[in-house]
Image 1 (cartoon, rainbow, N blue to C red):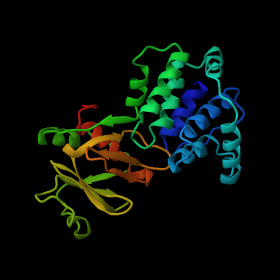
Image 2: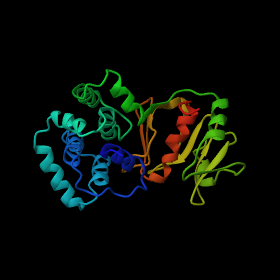
Image 3: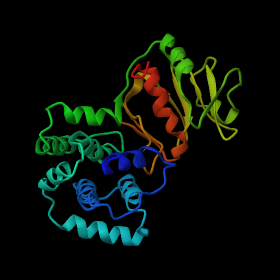
Image 4: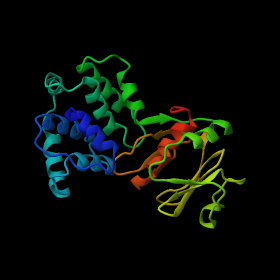
Amino acid sequence: MSRVDAYLELIDDPTAEALEPGHPADPALHRLLVHLAYSDGVVQGDEFALLQRVRADLEPGELMAWAMEEAMADFDDSELKLLVQRGEAPMDILRFAARMVCLDGDVAAEERARLAEIASALLLPQGAPDKAIGEVVAMGGSVSSKRVMAALRNMLWRRLQPRLGDPVEDALSAAAPGGEAVCTLVLDDKEVGALYTSGLLTRVDDAVRFIAFESVHSYTRVPVPGAGFHLRTVDGQHISISDPRMADLGGLLDYVYGDDL
């Protein structure tokens, strides 16, 4: 397995063990992530969490000092070409970079432009950045009740468990849209949400929310360090769930919107 592939597995699987440090490809890969994280001058919580995943050998204070030092040094895309010469696949390097810029489920124009620069340096085709972004961030929209039911039949659950026929708990039902839930969603024997044909009822960090499928603009489809799930609505709301065990919501929406059916 290449070093980039190993990092991609580490980032996408919250249960994966940290990689042993010291690989020859690490300095360039680490600098790439740091410069992407610092591109707007501020390292957000999710970005710092991703750096913690790849530099688990450093304590938080040490990590911040290291990242600031790396950010102040120049980064030349020629370093990425050296990675290719050492056997790393160009597309995998771009996918690795996309994991950083897609963390919150929203890719700004300047972040998309930076991915395009990286793709160009790696001699990748024009559509490569969109493909790399699409692995992490997917688009929502209106769906039929038939597709919601098909999603429930086909969904491969990792941590959440669907329970058919259970009533929605009072603590959640106040935010429910009305009508009967298709199923409730349970995590470690605690009800954390419910699936309706019109949308998803779930506990988020600050409240219980009902998210209509037609209101979804974009969402994260793989676990991201520092959060289990991010979602953006068409009216500009940002919904974040920090518990990584809730990452199944991204997979469920993939089925609802048809990307995995």
